[in-house]
Length: 246
Image: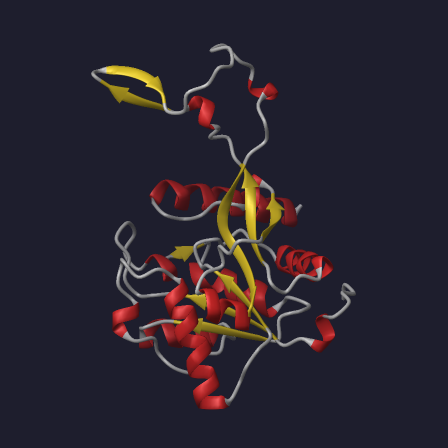
């Protein structure tokens, strides 16, 4: 187990929000990936974390709840249907779960880790490293979000005006540029979100004024939103399984 000062004194809860409806891929959160429902990958890495004390799935579906329980997650209650609609941001079922745990069990964890089920390539060591890094900052007025280096630099973005392409962002720099000369930029990969419980209840967001990054590699950062993402995840997991079998 990795030693991390302060972690042993903290109650760390992971919440996996897994609603039953999705637009792009039907039943996306339980769709089969290499013989297992997608949500199970997040459950397993959470349970195998050195630091997480409890793993809860927030879902509106009895079917999903039973599947998640079979993989070892705790599903103490179902999410209200109004918090399972497409337009509802994932932060609201997280807040709902935190409040219900307080009411039903007087359970008040110190740190909340949100793990979206659409990131099945994330590993337990990513969770442990991010938690360790968060505690090393020793700043509990901050949050942490996992990111990946972006290949979508603003210098490449164009928009169409009067039928012509023009730069999305005006620049005084030379129009011809080499990619390696561009500043490194990062984007959220939707994998790991960390915040103190009290801060999350107060701000109702992981995107606070002070957000520390946890940088992940691209090969672990696929966020499944469509069938192309799903194909890529299956391909990468098949490759990983093949290496493990060698």
